[in-house]
Image (cartoon, rainbow over all chains, first blue to last red; front, side, top):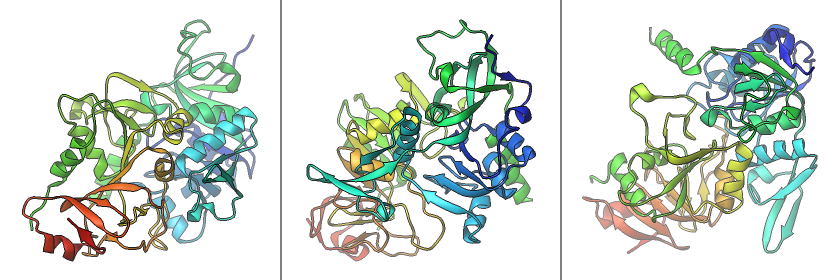
Length: 238
Length: 210
């Protein structure tokens, strides 16, 4: 019998090693696997390379992981945010390495990594400062950059529903990077709001098929970042 | 000098979008365009984080932080809307399927160059989907304030900041005017109410023509 369910988040991230590369789903606060990140903080792995679209907001989730000084390098497209002070301070103090990647290039690098494609040529960022050091090639009359696939040791993502095989559906725009991240990691860990049995999800609407998922943790009532940011703002106003 | 309010400016930019267009809205001022779509047209808004058919901002009691726009603010979904993952979302952008995108910017030149991702050495850079959009959207338009908060011009002959793309911008909307970068000059398409040519010239760091 296949049963990818884990009893708790800490058990599901127990083998993340120092120096691991970890994909973290989410865009803004939609789709952040906050409870899995908190388990990773508790677990203690250091010197991580983290790939996320952003660089954390407030002082929960990814921002808390950064504040705990567990991240050596972040690969992202948009570290700026309304509450990105944790990253901003580390960056200003030169205490974190930033690899800035255009958002579509980031998504495609992950998709390529998951699909066994080593790299691809894209016109995105050609001729800009973000092209520095990258191989270029002309196709037709246009310059393209060689971008390399991303593969990672772990992916931490959030889903709306998971069956015990690991078939996933998401909620609205909380899907974002999770499907491509699930494909690009050796071990994909999912926190799901609801669990169900195989057969309960309509096979026509499964977004991430179970082959891309390794571990499932049930988190029925995840932390809402907007609640945290509201509390943080009230605290600062006092 | 009066000019357009932010709302009027967003409505002015929305007015130029043809019926049936697929339109991406960037972070900042362009987000407001979603609230001011011209009546009588079916326009499908794309949000880079995996939405087609994005609607206006919801009423406060209907806010859902898993239904947000590129600026991470709550939006709605119109009937016929769809969700998809990031690689598909950017295949729409990079594959040339988006008719128009409207981006915010720090600087735009009369040659159509734009800068909106790096302030040089001040703070971390943030590119998001901007370079994908200028490379892949069929038409790039910019909506921004005409000058910086300190009163320096943002419409220039040459960029002072690192480029997002070169020769890509087709139209610029500011609170003072609608302008098209034509190469050597900005052609003024429309002046905002209460703004005259001399005021516009003084606020612009590149030649303008009527």
